[in-house]
Structure formats: C-alpha cells, structure tokens
Image (tube, rainbow, N blue to C red; front, side):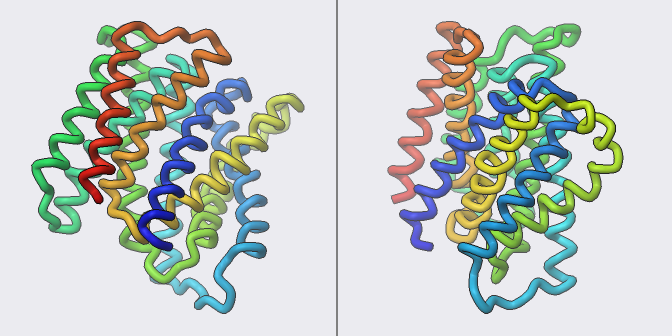
Length: 283
C-alpha cells in the first residue's frame, strides 16, 4: 500500500468510526451488549473479507504474533465498552469528542516507547487539536453526566492509543484483515459469556444497528485502520482520526437534533484546519 492509499484508507476509516456512536445510540442497549454484538458481526464480516481480499499464500501467525493480537483484542473490547458507556451517559457528541483526545496520548507514548524524536510541529498539531476539544467540551462539573461521560470517553481514547501502538509493533508481516479478525474474535470470546443474557433480550431493530456497526464501522473500518498503520506512523493516523468527532457531531445534529453551540462549531473548524495543515506538512 502506497502512502497516498494509506491516507485515503485512514480518512475513510475515520468516517466509518465516526458513525459508531450513532449506531451505538440507535441500538439502545447496554454497553456490554453493544460491544459484543459489534464483535459478532465484525467477525462474520472479517471472515468473509479474509476469504475474498486476504493475502493469498501468506505465512500463518505464530504464537509470538497471536499473543499481541489477543492483547490488542482486549484493548479493543475495553475501548468499545468505555466508549459506548460514554455514549449512553452523555450522548454522541461528548463521547466522540472525549475519544478524540487520543492523539495526545499517541504522540507522547509513541515517542516514549519507540524512542522516536517528536517534532515541534507535531506537538503544535496536538495542541491545536486539544484547543479544539476544549472549545467543544461543556462546562466541567464532576457531578454532571456530561463530565462522567467525558471521562469515560477520554479513558476510551487512552485505550485506543495503546491499541494503535500495539498494532504498529505487532502486525508486521501479518495480513491486516486476519489481524483484525483475531482481535475481534478475542473480544467475542471474552465478552459473550457475560453478554449472552443481554443479547437474548435485544430487539430486532437493535440487531439491525448492531449488524451495521459490526460490518461497516468495525470489520471494514478496522481493516483499513490496521492496514494504514503498516505505512503511516501511529501519530499521523491519530491526527487524521481527530476528524471523527466532527463526523459524529454532524450526524448527531442531523439525526438526534443535538445542535452544536458556537463554541463547538469553532472547535470543529479548528480540528479540521489542524488536519489540513498536518497533511500538508506530511507531504
């Protein structure tokens, strides 16, 4: 995959991930049930993608690769749990905006773990994204649902940053579709025993939203994300994924009448400007 195709894949993945909160809210279920149902349909979709688009004749993953992939699955499932808890508590907009804090975690952790020099321009990009998030964040009150949801979402962002760094370190030579399949299968096997009673009581309409969530926002989007990390640095992907809250807010505005305030609008514009500048600098 060329760098141009990797950038296109990561932007498309960001759009699909931006719909995750929308489908999760429409599913109207417990966070555990949503995460497990998402993993179920993702496994089915990824198994099909592996047959149709997977690398032919590739080497099978060994134990040294399966263990990090399984750990990535635990991080992925925990990220979903905390994210959908944020959606249930405080709504789509706050959840997606809190999750978008993960570029800051990624830049700091990537420089520390991979011993790579972080350029001043990258710190500046993260600072601009952080300022945009401050503008779109409601007033802090530890006793409010909005603040509780925001804290869950920020924790979700930390887990996702760890997942992106683990994928960068452990997916070399592994078919990205198979890597995503392994991680989602781990989520399914670990969560299904506890989630089965909740899924058994899930309505038919909720199953439809879970199917869309698992196939498009997970199976396809996660494959694009893992594949792009084989070409792009995790910090570059993180900055592009800062567009996700913009997509989430736009769809929440359209579907649920969650009208953004002037501060939220200005923050979203700042995030978009940051992505554009970072892409120009990357060239």
